[in-house]
Image 1 (tube, rainbow, N blue to C red):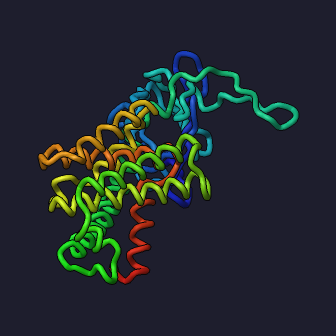
Image 2: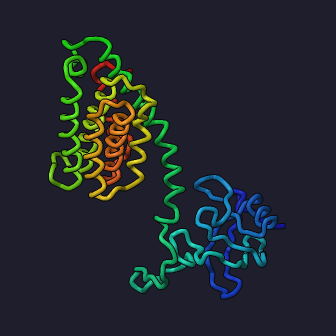
Image 3: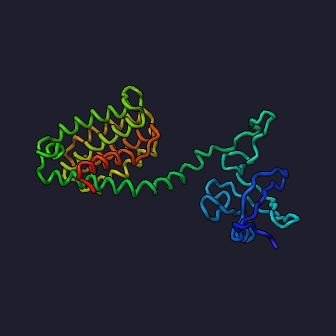
Amino acid sequence: MLKFDRQGLVPAVIQDDATDEVLMVAFMNEEALARTRETGYTHFFSRSRNATWRKGEQSGNVQEVRDIFVNCEENSLLIRVIQHGGAACHTGYRSCYYRRLLADGTYETVAERVFDPDVVYASSKNAEIGAQFNAALEEKMRQLYGVYLYLRDHDLSEQSNTSRLLQEHSQGYLVSRLADELEELAEVQSGEHAHAGRQPDTILEGSQVGYWLLLLAATKKLRYDEFSPHASILRGYYDRYSEGQAIEQQQNCLSLAAESDPARFAQGLQLGFALIGWACAEAGVSPLAPAEYDFEQMQRKGLLS
């Protein structure tokens, strides 16, 4: 009988059936071993995710099982496989043992990388992170927009500068202020505009861009779902525009934000929110950060609980 440890796991050494090369070591629980035997492809147990997974389910580099051996003490496995896709290691190397330990304690890389993990795992990482961000960002953006709609519909000009802006100023004025903030947000990324550092400056300027975009939406009486700012922020965050694309998008944003046609106007706002996401990605800032900054400011003013 195979002896699983106290955590219900057994180590499995994975060896290439054709070359005898050791490709990796992973852990199996009873479920992973059963799935491996049933399907003919390796399955392992992830301790970090607390879940059973099929090797190669994201990268496509699956392992077709040829033989399973048990050691003398029945507490480990040797599994000989055909490695499909060329790489067993999640870092992109054929084998997880791609470094040699040298006498001075340093490593020497002795193999070539087969694939770029940033490219191979990008879509799955983005989907996972995007799902986490999406709900939180939408909640905050809806609340912020709700405050601006209230300040638009209730003249609190004496207590609130935002209410005064919504009562007194035209679309043209708001677009001009948006243009200033978009320029500063871009200059933070190029290094031409700096105060406290790239990351805090990105959060501040990103929140300012979002502020003028939401005010514009409020003056045009758009419903939130007509421009869905949270979705645009995340799209900009993941699309990773080039500098030239960002400049072009900025120009298109301002042009469309001055339009009278509601659909084209909403499209302009979406481009502006996407630029917030782009800047956050460039600066290594969470796409939630500008909205969270505005949210905290609203809480201090007693406009949000």
